[in-house]
Length: 523
Image (cartoon, rainbow, N blue to C red; front, side):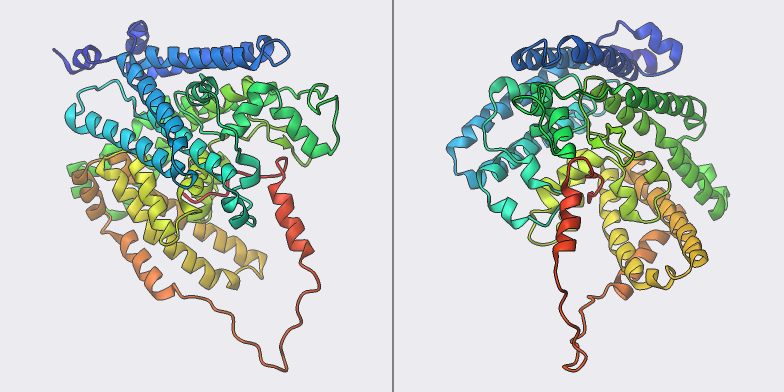
């Protein structure tokens, strides 16, 4: 049996599109995923037009969204889809059981249970099946479900115990008061949030309160009300006209077409594995290896761009994802966007790149880990991210390597940036240099994530002479200093500010739904 036939034989998903897979030269799981997402796009338009809150009750909308999501899982993963549903129902029952325990521990039990189940599935797929299920990777949807289960538990805990909101009043990126809730979800609400067809395959993970507002028809009207400060209709929602997402959906679909074209034409000609090819590593110069690594990583991004942008378009087509009105008065549909391509490609710092990549996962990491850890927040967040992604060694190489790079980037920026911001020319030069350094650092950091294995990662690091590790650790050690303000003398002591209202107003403006930006994350 050939390798191709063996892969087909071990596929657990539907095989109806096998001829299409052979014609396009794509794996069957990719074709099934694409078919489901395109069907989801059509279903989303139908859902918004014919199952709108004006035509259907929330119960009907919940039920239809859930049933379609389960159908997609069964189509793509077959009996593995049952495993996914079983994980969600199991955690749902445990979620209700946890209400019998003290509220201070509910979110922790949910986190341990969900992450434990996810890790067990990661281990079974990699080690027990020994990569045998070649065309079925069920970990993606399960990772999204894990995010949703834990996000819901943490937000419910925050709503029940106001301690977290009071403690994090000044953390505008968390928007604790806007995302927390204190009413236990019903079973259909819980299943709909976790298994709805809009996000069951590739996400993104949005917060529960926004999703329920969307199902109940309050999502857009509430944000328009926040923007205008007025209330239309008896309940503030009924008579507010909803802006159309059509322009946003079309724009995002054009981006998807460009990404697909780039993937089919360019990505395949720059395989990641060539970075560890024996002949290439042994005969190419360091500059050639560095150049190929840079362009091969750039070429690997469009498949992520495609999947996340298409998922964003599906949510928008259903009427979900409205963020508010932008500065020019046009509707912005980026509430559940998972990336900012321009921000990624023009990032001049490691943090800026992370802030614009996998945005919703970054928000989840901040919610469940970074904002709550008492010590070593950065390291714990990166380790949780690695554990969530899976058990491949390359994931851990990537996220552990990111720790000293992030610390070094902070130290370098804090130490030298102020020398370059006084002149436009110097600032331009600084931006160019930091852009190149950031992109090369990202390339070096992400490579093990795509290579996966220890052997290939070590070959790549050796071919690069571990230069980013060495530079970042040295920079972190030499430049990382605690900047403590000097005590002013009695005669030169500055007068206190007249009022802090301007800072409070700035913070308040950042928290408004129509102006907020969910990019402020630490991954």
